[in-house]
Image 1 (tube, rainbow, N blue to C red):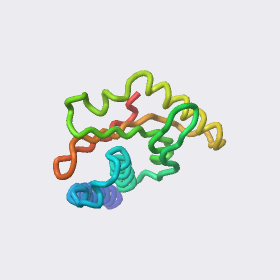
Image 2: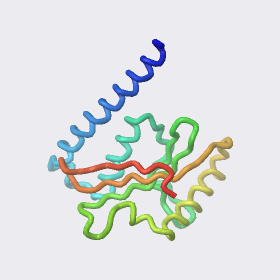
Image 3: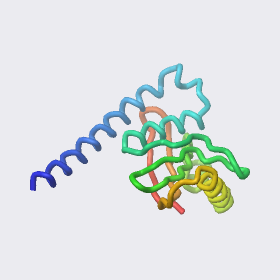
Length: 149
């Protein structure tokens, strides 16, 4: 009973920590020094911080091979996650999730196979996630789509 309560309390504290840190990130994003960054790189930094707060262990960032780039490669428990980060100022040109079309998915699969082969990793379960960032500053929304394709 006490162990169940501890697990529940720990999960609630982690959620509160992630939410509070996201608020601080949104405010800090409006600083002039942050606005000088390329929007794509700014989105990747934001996604990386968010995933680390949620317990992910980042193994690689901007991994390039096989004619493709994987934005983030991380461990989520015992699962290897290949993460594509898509940031959009607004949904006028489509949502971030829609930007990962079939062609992009095939590129990511090839790059993921090359990563696993080059690192000789033990047999881990793998999945492809998308971090969709819509908006900027205080109005930004971040959505983690696990096992997106």
